[in-house]
Amino acid sequence: MLQPVLKSLPCVQRYPGNPVLTSRDVPYDSSLVFNAGVIRWEDGYAVAFRNDYGCSQAGWETGERLTGTNIGLALSSDGIHWNVEPNPVMEVKDEEVQRVYDPRLTVIDGEVYMTFAMDTRHGLRGGIAHTEDLHRYDIISLSVPDNRNMVLFPEKVNGMYLRLERPMPVYSRGGKDRFDIWLSESPDLIHWGRSSLVAGVEDFPFANDKIGPGAPPVRTDKGWLVLTHAVDRDDSRGKNGWEKAWTKRYCAGMMLLDLKDPSNVLGICRKPLLAPEESYETEEGFRTHVIFPTAAIAEADGTLRIYYGASDTVIALAEAKINDLVDACLAGGC
Ligand code: BMA
Image (cartoon, rainbow, N blue to C red; front, side, top):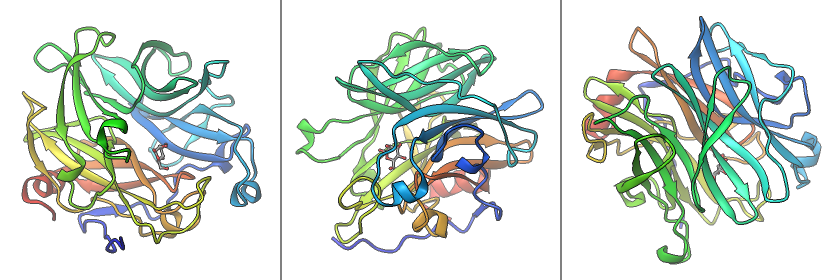
């Protein structure tokens, strides 16, 4: 079905110099640099990013396969200009595991954790790793398949660690993508349970396919602000990426969860926070029409920096006032 044109909320501004990090900035084999975790680190910022490698642009534009994925690390004093470390910091590839990807970073009680997705021969697993120095990662927890897009809350709530996650129940949801956002809790970041549904794809008016957690939640006075991705499908859309026809559009959405009981949704923004509009989001990449938010940093002046993968090809930045975003969640849009 033909889907309507979607526009970003007026209260969000893209950084005019977007994209802020691309494969051209990477000193090792790199084809696509996107979906990244960002935290404040020392006096600046650190980003752990997904790097798909092994194929030139001319190659991926004509359907050639990328051969691998690793996680790169870059540091920055302003969160805009990045120095990429000389070597990738994480890659898992063996008989069972094909790759790890889509890292998100969260600091809890001064400890840094990375959540990630892991493709294996027996399904897609969501993982959590701990790192002391952003260079070495110890995997401390892996889910059963199929689960991905895990994000950790930056603090315990009621004495428990919390994560948002997106299991992929195809068999029980009519054989289609109908994926929702769930909440699970853990006493130790290893054992996860007491899971509950937070929001279904049907709760996001501009999604008809799936939703998933985007960035780790941000504490605000009025609730946990959660950026999500929200996907609609339109069969008239064209070919892109590896698929015969790339019919999906990924927007950034958002919702506000109760501070004390995050399974309680206080408001879901009825419109997309960011919809693909700029050329690096709509036409120039490996895919088209993909905005995949993966990090949100609250600045002291009340601004939220939003980092997102654009068209699975580059990393872009947008900003908005946190109060405007909270109001938009509670009111339905700004
Ligand atoms: C999701 C993941 C992401 C990707 C997105 C858009 O399912 O594979 O890594 O950015 O699709 O292609």
